[in-house]
Image 1: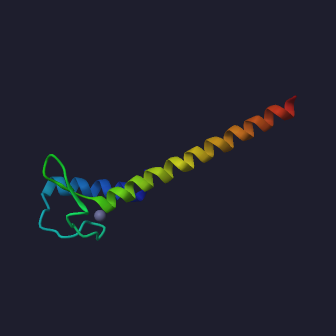
Image 2: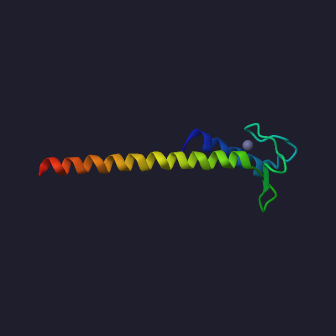
Image 3: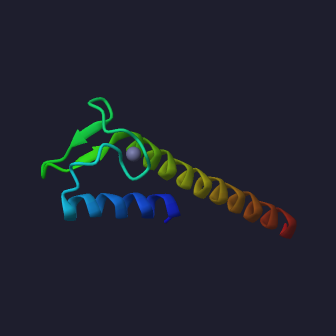
Length: 84
Ligand SMILES: [Zn+2]
């Protein structure tokens, strides 16, 4: 897990725990505007900019995993070719 997603989850947990609804900006400084805010079933606010960042973070993490897997496969193929 990256530092960013860890912090984002921690921020979310603290909102849920303390009901920090008077703040006008999220932990990362995004303003809670109508367009940028979604409400969960429990009434907690979610910053859409942070969600986007988190999604991007996940995407990048898996992209790196995919690249590593492809590299491994290429390496294994090369080894097999050398043995023959
Ligand atoms: Zn945010």
